[in-house]
Figure 1 (cartoon, helix red, strand yellow):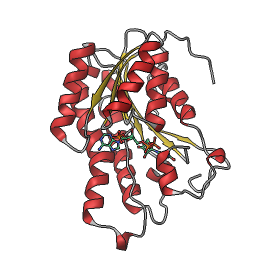
Figure 2: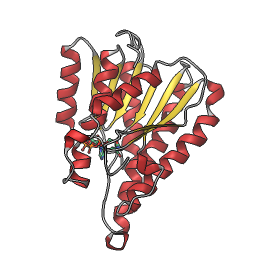
Figure 3: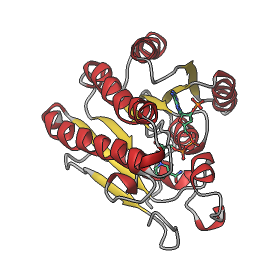
Length: 246
Ligand SMILES: NC(=O)c1ccc[n+]([C@@H]2O[C@H](COP(=O)([O-])OP(=O)(O)OC[C@H]3O[C@@H](n4cnc5c(N)ncnc54)[C@H](OP(=O)(O)O)[C@@H]3O)[C@@H](O)[C@H]2O)c1
């Protein structure tokens, strides 16, 4: 991958959901390392504060904004807090996600509601709340972290897969809706990445054969430092050996 100059995002601001661990933490660290101020969003405030301190210790700018993305008012408050602190927003990364895995017949409607709220409804609300700010500084970016499960179907992952398919539809339609405003909307569809989530879904898998969160962060950096007008709906990313989601 082309080397990206370390100060490429100086003066820009990113809001990253699910920044407390896994893929979101890596994305937040990478954006901060390249000069962006980063609003760190997830529920676990102490983890977010530790990441904020890590970024600040390296000379970067970050702010922990503990937020439950299942609650609409909390999402709206977190966007307001980001703007109060940083005055602008250039990059929205909808990364937070949860999964419920198992046969459909054993699932409950509340599982559906919970997964949809975090994986599909929260990105929708965040896009809506962020767009007025993203419009002010084109080119600006919305990066939705979907999954290979948002494109294919896998047994025992019906609810998770439905939520990621919803996120893909949101991405594709919004990409066209705001293209002329200089806002680029992309989805990244990873296969297996070594994080807590895959440990929960597939404890039998060896983390060594999976992708690392930093590899997804590299792709986010590539997308947000591109200056072209091309719409990239979907970036599929997997290791050949990354079973089963490959
Ligand atoms: N790992 C994989 O193999 C893989 C593959 C394809 C796609 N993905 C996608 O990548 C994204 C990140 O996953 P990951 O693997 O890094 O998972 P992870 O390690 O389990 O992290 C999930 C993140 O989402 C946050 N989150 C969960 N519920 C939330 C809520 N109600 N409000 C606010 N934040 C919430 C968590 O923070 P708190 O607990 O602090 O709230 C955490 O930061 C997800 O969208 C996932 O679907 C993962």
